[in-house]
Length: 394
Image 1 (cartoon, helix red, strand yellow):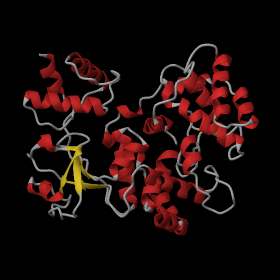
Image 2 (cartoon, one colour):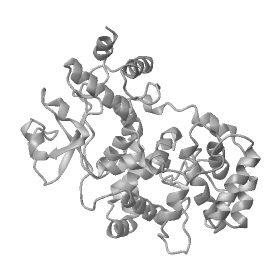
Image 3 (tube, rainbow, N blue to C red):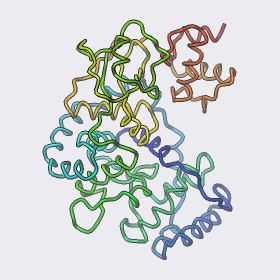
Image 4 (cartoon, rainbow, N blue to C red):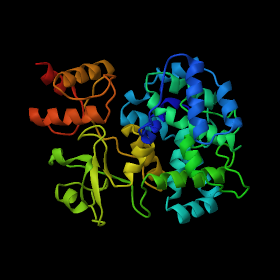
């Protein structure tokens, strides 16, 4: 995709504990590769996969990309307006018609609706147009050997070597700098475990076969906990005042409760209780856009842990399903990157774990903001404002 940096967060959804290894990262590169080869051989990887590993090299361009991310410093509205383009809406609608039969099979087999798949397809590669041109094995070897965060990448090496060894992928397969492959940027572990031959040609080609892409993407989404025939998000309007401390993606309540507090559909019509529970997400605070987030929205965060990306993907799917453009409303002025870093530093000094002080409004920072807003008697909406920064600076 044009902003490849957003796809790195997808790697977080697959992170699991790695088995003990003699040397997980760093040190002599050739010696390190020998350790990976031993692990791969023990997992059943044969000569073709091992030969590919031996030929893999460090790619300095991959390291440069890994250290140059900044797309998620944009606000939700900025990012969403940029990513939900007229082209993607038009081409997405065309593809929904063109591949209607394949989408119908995916829905029947996996319970994942066509707009869900199409939104990921659009955001990740513009429907296959921009899949990346990095040597995938060298990219993963580079990021696994690098000690910055090897745990996110090392677990993808053996699955990739298995795919190469079996002839599913060529040794020189290319994709994104962070190791994703194909039109919806699937990681090797998912390619191996979730790949589907959608066109019946006996192969799983996620770079060139649209039916394979659609069916595999549906299978991956289902594997992350998708619930058939249930909604994912619903844009709503919030009142001037309500119990803001009850808002947030994870505090799921019946729609009747949100309605009692004055939450309505964007038109002003009262919410209709559908028997499901939903959280109330305020990506830019109480004066910005607002969304009910159902259990299926959690799957978007499994795909990519960036809340901004996940909500944008969910909103694009809603648009492709017929929803109108979102109402940006009039959010309070936020903080620039340097101010955000200052805020994170102050939160860290108060004992909060905000992760890296990077100026990005991530989950930990947002939760710390909510707690400080509550302590200071401010509306608890998780949005960083100059007022909050000023009070913490007193």
